[in-house]
Length: 141
Image 1 (cartoon, one colour):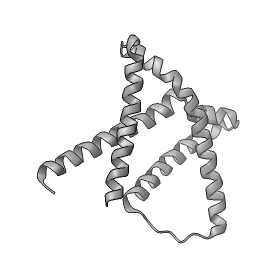
Image 2 (cartoon, rainbow, N blue to C red):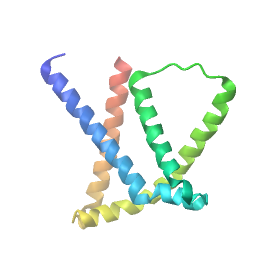
Image 3 (tube, rainbow, N blue to C red):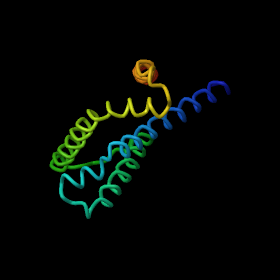
Image 4 (cartoon, rainbow, N blue to C red):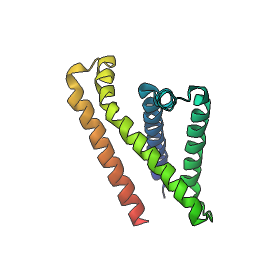
């Protein structure tokens, strides 16, 4: 790998990390996932534990993504883990329905009210090209 390829790879990796991290933080703060979760479950006194769980889960996901650990877990323990994962995906899917409200707010704050279609297309094409790049890059390896 040449120096320019390494620099481009580092730039793409850092840009992707910043985009995903910014989106995740915006998702949590704009939608107020943690306060809503605590309010719905009537456990507002445990909101700090929700925050800690999200941080620990994020760090574990980063570690698992970078290191690809192999953990010998009993199949009986995998059932509750799968249920917890399903609950998480369900909650995220429900909250993503509200993300559509974020785009007009973002457009107003950036003073691009008339260019919401351009903003949506940038998000769509960014997702498409990012997915294609990841799929093609990792399939060739």
